[in-house]
Length: 226
Picture 1 (cartoon, helix red, strand yellow):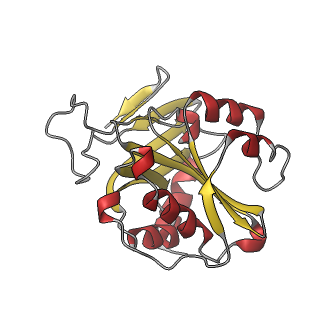
Picture 2 (cartoon, one colour; picture 1 turned 90 degrees about the horizontal axis):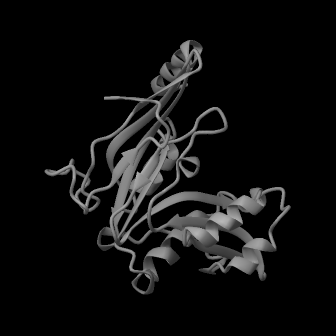
């Protein structure tokens, strides 16, 4: 067990804690990576998403379909023999906290995105097809077909202990740029929010109020800490 996991386990004995690494990828910095050759990818349409209701692995719910429609989500579907084996979702504007959460114990942290910046918040591959670079294929499709969707930069978060995933997405150009945390202590929620940052450079913005910054914020009136 690595040191980060040991620290995580120790902290969770005191309080519930969700620590995430924030990363960004300007599509201009996309580095070609080895992707799955067994699947084909394309943009996902709402009727196809609705057809997956009840699938035990994709776990699509009616509420998610409503969000897909209302928030203008972009979905990518990976198929093998015309059957869906993977889904990937990006949101092009404000990200609701429930879509950036470490699980049911947490409310999550919302994200405000400037124009042309999309948030990658969900990627699912069926268990029988995992380990075959299907996630990479879906991401590559989104980047390669971004011109029609005005996609300039992708921002995402992942558990800070997920070293294998972090290494894999850093190989294709993602850069670590911030950390975000949610704590649950005696029923009270505290948050550690990253400073607004430039989505291209990944550096803290010179002007926090700039409309070109990525900003993390708390939807509720819970306490934020720095």
